[in-house]
Amino acid sequence: MDLLEYQAKALFSEMGIPVLPSQRIDYPKDLKRLKIPYPVVLKSQVHTGERSSLGGIKFVENTIDAVAAAQTIFNLPIKDEYPVVLLAEAKYNAAQELYLAIVLDPIVRRPLLLGSKQGGIEAETTIKSIQKVVVNQEFSPFYARRLMVKIGMEGKLIESVSHIVEKMYQLFLEKDLDLIEINPLGISPRGEIMALDGKVSVNDYALGRHPDLVSIVGKNISNNYEIKQKEVKEIDDSSLLGIGNINGDSNERIIPDYRLKFTELQGNIAIVCNGEGLTMATVDLVVQAQGKPANFLNIKLGDYLEVKDSLRSQMFAALDLVSKKENVKVVLINFIGIVETSDELITIVYEYLNKLNSIDQKKIKFVLRLLGGRISKARERLSELPVEVIENLEDAVSKAVSLSK
Image (cartoon, rainbow, N blue to C red):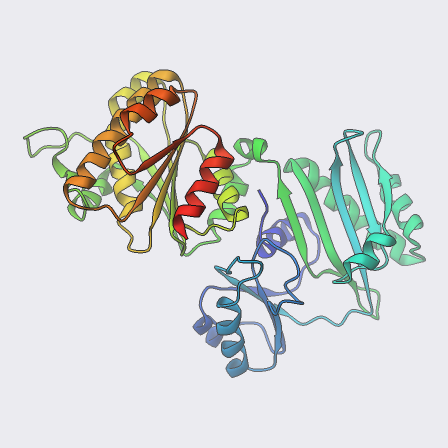
């Protein structure tokens, strides 16, 4: 899972790596309440590179220019990805720019420190001059200083930049990262250092150990909240299906004790998963495949007895919630579970889509990815309904993105 620049810089700040004063911009009008003095730089917050050369970074001197620039950037795709937010940041005059990174080397299975005196947007120059130091024993400041000597740092900069590398390594270990990168690390004429851009890639399989990182990603959007059982009634009242009476003819509905964690974005693919790590990994894969998530929702499940009693209520509420937004074209359901859970899920999806058909809600397509269940049974049961049943996650994501176009 790749973090956006402003999310990476939030981690930098917590670790003591210096970053510039900045402000998140959700809409161009937010610049009328900008707390940073001009001039400022506006940066498109996307996961791809080459923002500067493609027009995603603009320097502005006043509010009028800033609002106009923000409108342009919000409507500018960077390699087919539109920004959901922008970052407004103070301008910094750097006399020198460095490249620093730490990656996990898959061959030697050890962290690798990378550095170059040629940082910034000239990627080819940076690659040619890059120096490497393998951390083959317990980390110590020696490794950071060795990198400084190899890239040609001198005097007090050896100590100050080494200190940044040490903090990067600490963050790398604490958050189970695959990559941490500062490009560039700016050095002012007075020798002050500043992380001017940052990239952080988190190991997807480690997300379960880091709910704080999942929370950071949630702050990428403007509407992030948990729906508790007392709020499910409100969902039912505005339901596509009118499912407020799903337990029979009685007007009384029994709601199990659960929470649906729901987050809204601005795309057209809704995502429903069971588990925070799985949810965020799925969102990340959709973005990488050039898809645009409309929202995502995590269903928290307990043991099988709990699942049997509550899964139907949760799934009806969850599918209804993510589907009723006008912009949603596709719903991607990604579940990992035991056979019994998957069989129950197949039945629930069958019932839900049958109801959708009965009220002529055919504009929404569904993709169901099952792992740990009976995929052939799902395909047979759902063959007459508007749903693609796929076992491989990458294939499911690709199909959802294709259907959303």
